[in-house]
Image 1 (cartoon, one colour):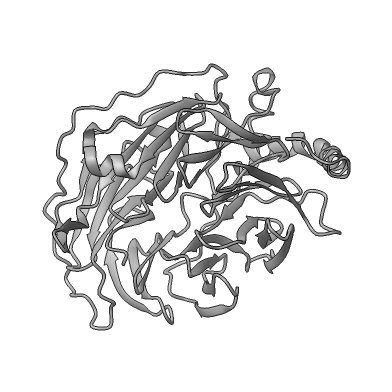
Image 2 (cartoon, helix red, strand yellow):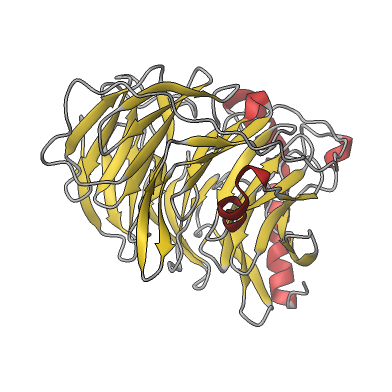
Length: 460
């Protein structure tokens, strides 16, 4: 991409400003505190590139064990939700299943091989992908609850949760991103990127084979966009000379499922954190956020949204969230707070400042993208209108203990129609909150230390 002279000068100045900070920053991130706000520490990875395509294993059923009914029925005030919760252990390798409608809990129903880095549902709500980084593996689950077309109506299907025997093993899978039609999984140790089509999962089940490309080992990121396109991180050119120092990428490129490069933007020192809204991908960087926009006529527009004037020289955004139909994005830096980034306006504004003990630690958009939840370090949960950015509700003192600062120990949250689900690791339970006033209306005891979770079921 060729920039006008003024933009070239601004880009060079920005690069010079952050070049010196980057080397020291990467070392601190990798050694002292993990590499960002939203991910576990990534160990140094081998420079060798792996190009072998994982083969799909023979599909076999993996039904959920017979659940033991809870001692207490669902509360009368609980919203009617049709689906299950997949709840993973923050210390062990087991994942339990909660049937929200019946209150039944199948404890330790599936062995993931190691504690999960992420458990995300696909956009339809039928499937979920659990990433077990320490086991060099990832798992695809069919939630078993979905609507199936039948003549002029839809039939509700209810089956056991099952694991699809799709081989997603590889060298350090970490970053998972779910879009409207595709999910993408990045393997840091090899640079492999697996593209998983939800349509393929529905039609082929365990026989489905994801598309695979290789972009070179590094601590990568990707965003699934509309029209079968993806924004994939571009590794630092000096990576092979010093993988630990240059583990973070410097930009991203737009590719299709065959790996063909269509556009490239290299303007993001210390890239980490990413999100998309279907047509725009945004990445967290030192000094601001980089974006790439895909237009309907197959052209591209990209640029950089700089931190406001007067921002600290080490200003860095490490986690980003977005939603379809929403022009702005949310970006979090542990030392700088939660910001609203608008690529179209080229500006960002502070939503929640970084205050010791009262900073934002996690964000989750609702299933319909109309609101978002912010978990605060003091245990407060806030709900905001996604478009107007107004506070809609807040609650405190609903967790059994303080919010742990580490990635694997802190609570996670997901939404379904009428409900918010939050794991309570200290209390060894999962909570259901009604989504208007965020009052707790139900809880389930879950073995282990429940942290990551996903909702699989009916979303509309």
